[in-house]
Image (cartoon, rainbow over all chains, first blue to last red; front, side, top):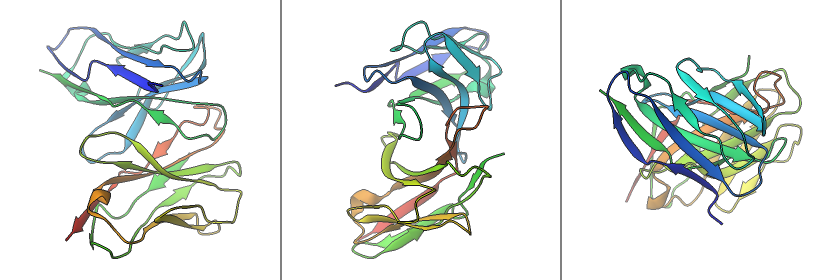
Length: 112
Length: 117
């Protein structure tokens, strides 16, 4: 059972480039979300999804796009990378209600 | 708005001793869940303990326990018999059926725990 799988683990981009961070879970969880973690901060919610075909914005959605075509996958797209998006990105999933979130191992993204 | 506050950026404990990490939260929801996550240098987010805010009984997981004070909106984590492997960043988080983010977690800024031999 792989849990939540994020790829890549590390990535360096140039300003203006676009890319997609992949996230897949094999636990049939309905709820998936993306967070970013910056030094001295906790994790902040970027986007989330409560089921296939349903997505919504979190606290810091600007510059990011998501889609949820299947229960398993929830990719995060950076449309035009900016240095302010340098961060560690976590994908998480959970069952309904107040169940614990299961996190991927994170993607460290640097934008030059 | 829901907020989670950790007021201790760093804490230190000697091996085999007990340490308590503080956390307060602010929400008007009664259906609320509280969590402590551990993040070692590997940056994995590891669930330590979970508490349902409508339950008075404090959650316990082996050497980890919480002191949940509902009226004070306090959710502190006690680590007993501290071990070197407990050294990590600890995050307090809370979530409820908020219409804007459907049980998404609000995180504190974290407490870095150092364990000394």
